[in-house]
Image (cartoon, rainbow over all chains, first blue to last red; front, side, top):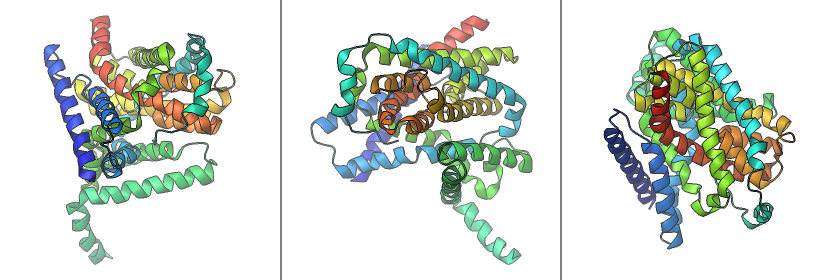
Length: 134
Length: 257
């Protein structure tokens, strides 16, 4: 049933947030340290294990896939509920920061590409045609 | 007309989350139409929708004088719930579902390096720009830097560290600028940065991080590259959410103190 997938997702998020909160307390800061990222790793590990042992029927998967498919609309709603009026004063800052970030990242592609090239890299395209749906 | 408004208003207010689904759904539909017809698909629909969301949030703030954009209009309060941290984190974690650890580990060293360089480099570039614009507190610097990573890392970092809403909004705007630039510039620079094989697409995804930007940019370059870039890009946000409020925050705090 779809609710099983949703429950696994919920369990991962709650566990991740708990670990993140404990990490924050251990580091002495009033913050959730990486809870969302830990939850993502948990979901990758748990869904991988379930898929391997054949315990992940389509109905269960659909209980996760629905939430993953409305991630963009949720981000749109998030954007629509931000304090943009106050942010306009920092408008140039957002544009400069975003632009420099992109220039930096573009420039790093060839640099890292030169690192550790191996022969079987180019073979993936035919071996792993499946896509992650986002 | 007034009677009709009097009848519909309490329904929209009482079922505010349902109203939000309808409104955001319509906005998304319109944005994808605009993407298709006005830009020939060159600017991704999601980027237009997010930009429209930010514009409407400005309008909401101007109309109500509040701090939560459109969500301060009573019958649109559900947008605040839909876009709040609970559903946002829930759906973000769900996007990790399609990722396979073994596929990712095949990128080897360069995949890990691209992710670390992408996340840490972007946050530090963003924080440096914020510093140049007069911000001095570690929480705001890390949040704006996080936004330069992606428009998810910024708000997640900001929420975790307790940043103010206007700083979070700047971080979302910085992430949006990045996402739009990656979408529109990738086809132009693809040849120059060697973006013509799965391996460089993986590195590209790890360095850029913005899933919509990477998906849009790679689709406009060569559709076959999309899954590889999107796969590493999915790790980027998780890594950014993990490193942003922790290691990077402590580092920036140490720098400014």
